[in-house]
Length: 162
Image 1 (cartoon, helix red, strand yellow):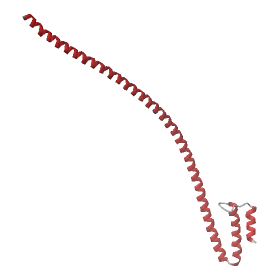
Image 2 (spheres, one colour):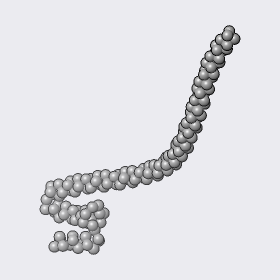
Image 3 (cartoon, one colour):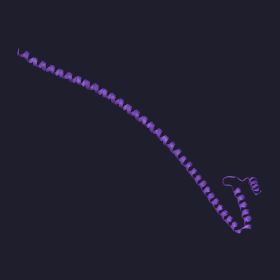
Image 4 (cartoon, one colour):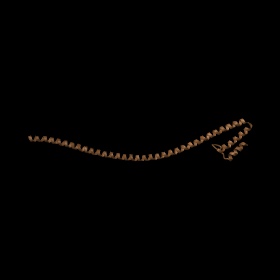
């Protein structure tokens, strides 16, 4: 009969059967007090022992509640830190993305400049090659003309002696 009365009281007051529930806690505290009073009528020593067990259970529940509330606060702080960190990191990522784009544009400009300089140097090298070839040809021609002049000079005095 007492069990049925407990279940009815839990249903009427909409107490949760699991987790931390102040309604269920109050109902069980009242039942425990009633039990202590009932046992105390027959044996005061047993009632004192039940009071001690009840006090110990109450301290354990309070300790669990404190740990639970602290963990909720800790989780909330960590969540806020994570949100702040995420926002900071997202802005850092966008800044770095912009920097990457700028650097890529600079790389492309420098590559184009290098290619243009290489092309100019190739053109200059070809021009110098042509000039060197012309100089070599002119030097060869000059040498041939000098050799021819020398031959002619040598051959002229022979005609004068005859």
